[in-house]
Amino acid sequence: MGRVEVGVRVLPKNYYSISGEQGELFRPMSESRKEEFQKYLEKSGVIDTLTKVLVNLYECPEKPPNAINFIKESMGPAPPGGDVEKLQAKVKEQQAALEAKEKEILELKQKLADLTEAQKKAE
Image (cartoon, rainbow, N blue to C red; front, side, top):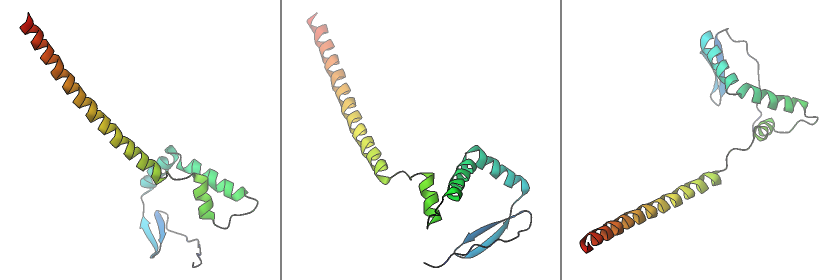
Protein backbone atom coordinates (compact mmCIF):
# COMPACT_ATOMS: atom_id res chain seq x y z
CA MET A 1 0.00 0.00 0.00
CA GLY A 2 1.12 3.53 -0.67
CA ARG A 3 1.69 6.04 2.06
CA VAL A 4 -1.13 8.43 2.78
CA GLU A 5 -0.17 11.97 3.60
CA VAL A 6 -2.49 14.37 5.30
CA GLY A 7 -2.02 18.06 4.81
CA VAL A 8 -3.77 21.08 6.21
CA ARG A 9 -5.00 23.66 3.78
CA VAL A 10 -6.39 27.06 4.51
CA LEU A 11 -9.58 27.42 2.52
CA PRO A 12 -11.64 30.49 1.80
CA LYS A 13 -14.35 30.98 4.44
CA ASN A 14 -17.28 29.41 2.59
CA TYR A 15 -15.53 26.47 0.97
CA TYR A 16 -15.21 22.84 1.95
CA SER A 17 -12.77 20.24 0.74
CA ILE A 18 -13.29 16.70 -0.56
CA SER A 19 -10.25 14.47 -0.83
CA GLY A 20 -10.30 11.46 -3.08
CA GLU A 21 -8.27 9.36 -5.42
CA GLN A 22 -8.45 12.03 -8.07
CA GLY A 23 -7.10 14.77 -5.83
CA GLU A 24 -8.72 17.37 -3.70
CA LEU A 25 -11.79 19.28 -4.77
CA PHE A 26 -12.93 22.59 -3.35
CA ARG A 27 -16.57 23.53 -3.48
CA PRO A 28 -18.38 26.59 -2.20
CA MET A 29 -20.90 26.08 0.57
CA SER A 30 -23.25 28.74 1.84
CA GLU A 31 -23.15 29.56 5.54
CA SER A 32 -26.81 28.59 6.03
CA ARG A 33 -26.24 25.26 4.28
CA LYS A 34 -23.25 24.53 6.55
CA GLU A 35 -25.30 25.39 9.64
CA GLU A 36 -28.20 23.26 8.43
CA PHE A 37 -25.88 20.31 7.82
CA GLN A 38 -24.23 20.75 11.22
CA LYS A 39 -27.65 20.78 12.93
CA TYR A 40 -28.55 17.59 11.06
CA LEU A 41 -25.34 15.88 12.23
CA GLU A 42 -25.92 17.02 15.82
CA LYS A 43 -29.57 15.96 15.81
CA SER A 44 -28.81 12.50 14.44
CA GLY A 45 -26.04 11.91 16.99
CA VAL A 46 -23.23 11.71 14.45
CA ILE A 47 -21.09 14.39 16.09
CA ASP A 48 -21.41 12.84 19.57
CA THR A 49 -20.59 9.37 18.28
CA LEU A 50 -17.58 10.51 16.25
CA THR A 51 -16.34 12.60 19.18
CA LYS A 52 -16.52 9.61 21.52
CA VAL A 53 -14.70 7.38 19.04
CA LEU A 54 -11.96 9.96 18.45
CA VAL A 55 -11.54 10.54 22.20
CA ASN A 56 -11.19 6.78 22.68
CA LEU A 57 -8.53 6.71 19.96
CA TYR A 58 -6.73 9.66 21.53
CA GLU A 59 -6.77 8.05 24.98
CA CYS A 60 -5.41 4.68 23.78
CA PRO A 61 -2.07 4.12 25.51
CA GLU A 62 -0.82 2.22 22.46
CA LYS A 63 -2.08 3.66 19.23
CA PRO A 64 -3.54 1.03 16.90
CA PRO A 65 -1.62 0.42 13.68
CA ASN A 66 -4.73 1.12 11.61
CA ALA A 67 -6.81 4.03 12.90
CA ILE A 68 -9.57 3.48 10.32
CA ASN A 69 -10.13 -0.10 11.51
CA PHE A 70 -10.15 1.14 15.12
CA ILE A 71 -12.85 3.66 14.23
CA LYS A 72 -14.89 1.06 12.33
CA GLU A 73 -14.69 -1.39 15.25
CA SER A 74 -15.55 1.34 17.76
CA MET A 75 -18.60 2.37 15.76
CA GLY A 76 -19.91 -1.19 15.93
CA PRO A 77 -20.23 -3.93 13.39
CA ALA A 78 -22.25 -3.47 10.26
CA PRO A 79 -25.31 -5.71 10.07
CA PRO A 80 -24.13 -9.01 8.64
CA GLY A 81 -25.59 -10.15 5.34
CA GLY A 82 -26.73 -13.39 6.94
CA ASP A 83 -29.38 -11.54 8.95
CA VAL A 84 -30.90 -10.09 5.81
CA GLU A 85 -30.96 -13.51 4.18
CA LYS A 86 -32.61 -15.03 7.28
CA LEU A 87 -35.24 -12.30 7.26
CA GLN A 88 -35.92 -12.81 3.54
CA ALA A 89 -36.29 -16.56 4.12
CA LYS A 90 -38.66 -15.85 7.04
CA VAL A 91 -40.74 -13.53 4.83
CA LYS A 92 -41.06 -16.24 2.14
CA GLU A 93 -42.01 -18.77 4.81
CA GLN A 94 -44.64 -16.43 6.25
CA GLN A 95 -46.02 -15.68 2.77
CA ALA A 96 -46.40 -19.40 2.07
CA ALA A 97 -48.13 -19.91 5.43
CA LEU A 98 -50.45 -16.98 4.70
CA GLU A 99 -51.38 -18.40 1.29
CA ALA A 100 -52.10 -21.80 2.88
CA LYS A 101 -54.34 -20.15 5.51
CA GLU A 102 -56.18 -18.14 2.87
CA LYS A 103 -56.79 -21.33 0.87
CA GLU A 104 -58.02 -23.08 4.02
CA ILE A 105 -60.40 -20.17 4.76
CA LEU A 106 -61.85 -20.38 1.24
CA GLU A 107 -62.35 -24.14 1.60
CA LEU A 108 -64.06 -23.70 4.98
CA LYS A 109 -66.31 -20.94 3.62
CA GLN A 110 -67.31 -23.27 0.78
CA LYS A 111 -68.05 -26.10 3.24
CA LEU A 112 -70.13 -23.73 5.37
CA ALA A 113 -72.08 -22.59 2.31
CA ASP A 114 -72.66 -26.24 1.27
CA LEU A 115 -73.84 -27.21 4.77
CA THR A 116 -76.11 -24.18 5.01
CA GLU A 117 -77.64 -25.06 1.65
CA ALA A 118 -78.07 -28.72 2.67
CA GLN A 119 -79.74 -27.66 5.93
CA LYS A 120 -82.18 -25.41 4.06
CA LYS A 121 -83.11 -28.27 1.71
CA ALA A 122 -83.66 -30.59 4.67
CA GLU A 123 -86.13 -28.20 6.29
